[in-house]
Amino acid sequence: MSADPAVVTAIGRSPLGRLLGDRAAVVGLAIIAVVVAGSLLAPWVAADPIAQDVGNRYAPRSIDHPLGTDQLGRDTLARILHGGRYSLGMSLAASLGIAVLGVVLGLASASYGRATDTVINRLADVFLALPTLVLMLVVVGLLGQGLRNLVIAVILVGWPTYARIVRGMALATREREFVTAAEAAGASRARIALRHLAPNLIGPVIVLTTIDLGRVLLAVSALSFLGFGVTSPTPEWGAMLSDARTLFTSHPELMLPPGIAITVMVLAFNLAGDGLRDVLDPRDVEGGARWDRPAST
Amino acid sequence: MGRYVARRVLVAVPTLAGLSVLIFVLVSLAPGDPAEELTRKRFGDTEPTAADIARTRAMLGLDEPAVTQYLSWLGNALTGDLGTGFSRGRPVSTEIADAFGVTLVLAAAAVLVVVVVAFPLGVAAAMLHNRWPDHLLRLLTLVGASVPGFFLAYVLIYLFAVELGWLPVAGRGGLDHLVLPALTLAVVPTAIVSRLLRSSLLETFGESYVRAARAKGLAATAVVVRHGLRNATIPVVTYLGTLLAGLLDGVLIVEVIFAWPGLGQLTVQAIGARDYPLIQGIVLFAGALYVGLNLLVDLSYRLLDPRIRLAGTGER
Image 1: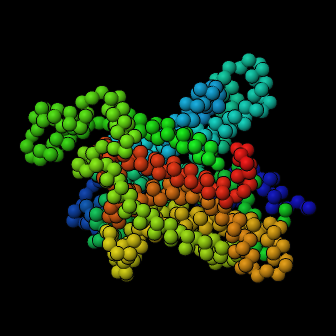
Image 2 (image 1 turned 45 degrees about the vertical axis):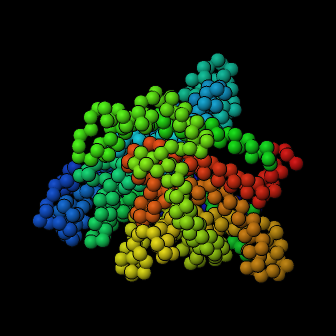
Image 3 (image 1 turned 90 degrees about the vertical axis):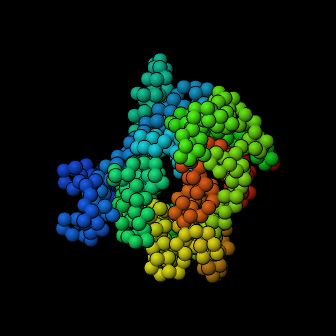
């Protein structure tokens, strides 16, 4: 069997080089960069997202209002860009919270003996006993509407999967020789977890978090859409969609900007996440088998 | 097998109990006083006195310590009595049973869409690898993974109800009322099932038994259906648990948008009204349903694939 040239080049290039060679991932990263930059700079580059101009309601696209205006004459582009600060900010906060809580509990589960492991596992079972959105809705509904509670709900529901994965990886790493050596040298459990296990988890957890960003944004937007996020004048994509809903029969076009914003960002996160996974896990290359032409093995 | 089922059921009991404790903890953390809110709602414009509120509180059992409240709720729940909803005063179990029946119709329609679309699409995409059915599937997967259901629903309503006028916008009625909500609900699972089928079919095409069937001159379609599809269905069965979760999550959004009076809408209403007994009942019911159906999925998986059954707990 001769070496496949594609495999040779794939191994020869750096991970970053390979990520930049993946056209879909580059498109995803570019979209993320543009939207994140636009949202971060919104207070300086965009119009006031709350200022009403009742004489100029439902304005079509123009130079002054590139995406038109809404039912209160507010600039739609400004609301989308400012809305990104909330939608993307909440998603990022939730993703970080999930990763941190998942890593801490997963590491504790793998490092601190059977009792800790059992308690954390049973707790994870409880949070996995309901479909995610149902549980998120119940949690945020009971804690009360608001940005902070919405993020808490997403974190509370999201951590168990991460804890399970981290626990598995940590248990596998514990079998490696450098950990056995550290144990033999008398290192404490906390030291082993933090100095020897945690560094090996950072890469996979970053990939996991990136892949999940799209799903987190969908969850955050869904909860906002159902009315559990920001309060009325504050722009946020899910909430904007929910506002537009009441005017759907007369002005369906109001749904497009926030709907497309969410779709494009989720798509960009998915493309970037898939690219990152392919780069960091090159085994996962799709085979070229066909029903009449099986893959050579 | 029997022992396996018993063990899984026993593990589910503390999990569901934990879920109900979680809800009680959240309720006690929740801001606001349900007794006061309810009394105000009953009184309308007249201002209720502290005594009125206290009376409501005692009537709802909210004056008891939290642990007592929980234990009495649990005791009743074990006998099948989930209490009475605050907001409409109907028994929680009746509310859930009625709504669940309505949701089942919608879910069944969605599953029908998934089966009718996903199998032909998955097979076509695998047989015509990298040709148009494969590209169509790639597009569907992209849409399914990226377009939020609450946006897609309105795109569909706009196209088929507003512009073309073929279907009703929302509400419950004849079969035509089912089409749009079922489609919205079905997009994501259809994409996932057909992709799973496609990739596992492509995998079976590499197996020696498929090559042998081809070599002996069996027609391509017959090979795919008789040899490929049978083996390719197993990974799809493992996905059924996720499909179910997706449906339960999906009905929350879809039922609200399409004014479909099922479990999803009931959940959102119960949370909006802070109807604690109803929320607690729905959570317990949904949890039991989810855990129970996942168990069924695992069992059917073991039945379908003898390798797993034999490699299992050493029974037989």
